[in-house]
Length: 364
Ligand SMILES: Nc1ncnc2c1ncn2[C@@H]1O[C@H](COP(=O)(O)OP(=O)(O)OP(=O)(O)O)[C@@H](O)[C@H]1O
View 1 (cartoon, rainbow, N blue to C red):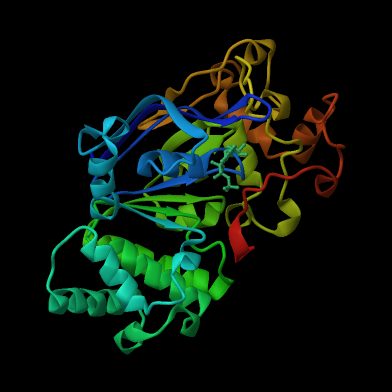
View 2: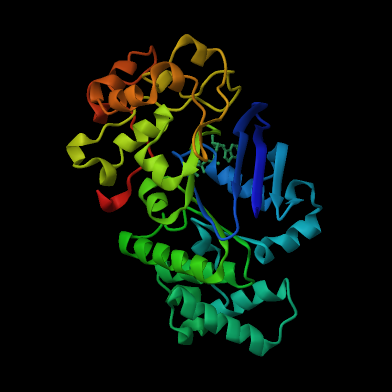
């Protein structure tokens, strides 16, 4: 197993209000060698915090309070700063949404990639240059352009250059956190295609973090669905999309056009996730869930196996029955009936309520 995240808990403290946000609350998943693993969930559910926890690049007010992050068996949460610095780039590389803005306008692109190499290895100038040429070819930029300054590159080229930089030391794990969100649709497609090819060519594993379910559906072997700091469901991507178990994933499926047909069949999930300060010992989806029962508000259901290598954190699957749940969840009135909660958004018209921000992408 390449990466094992076990019961990870990460908090942020707001010193002015003394409040604590538990952004990641007991998350576990594993990534095998060469595997592409998707982490999907709406904005603010804690996805980037997982990436930052694995990389150990949390801001000063962020802290891993519990759990383990094992890379090749070594718990990264216990490493001192210097050995951890060595693991970054060499063993794990991060491509973030804003990666392209990290290029320094004063230096040429190849100089910056070579600096990244020099921070970890003592390669000759020739070897570094060969590697930059090789990587530019891999990410689809003419190697002649390696001596350009960042402003001579388009946004898509800059993001590709950052992908090249992330790959320069052949990491075992690439974490791609919304790698294409800042780009236009055509560049998004090209870059995702390149990432997929690169991952296959290099044999690296990938943790792909996105709010866009269509990206995960296309690119990942297994997927975890995250909701309000916790995992709701985890399993093979295909079964997560075709036979989901958690009511939240059932709701997402309704909002996913390429699986569910025309745009008029889309059903949003009314309401919004709960705040992550002082989370109650309850299912966090209960207030938006059409199947919630009193027990859902008195304890937080653990993940349990629902099918082969497939787990979901829902206490109602056995009582309601998964076939009934799926049948019911496909009906608009079932979701909008839920929205009578005191502070819920208005029911009836999906557009009037706060829809989930997880999207089915631009393939709609
Ligand atoms: N530096 C910080 N200080 C305080 N709270 C933070 C900080 N960074 C994130 N949070 C909070 O932690 C929670 C999880 O944020 P995170 O960025 O991990 O979510 P996300 O799913 O990646 O969302 P997005 O896709 O919008 O980045 C949110 O409630 C967010 O407000």
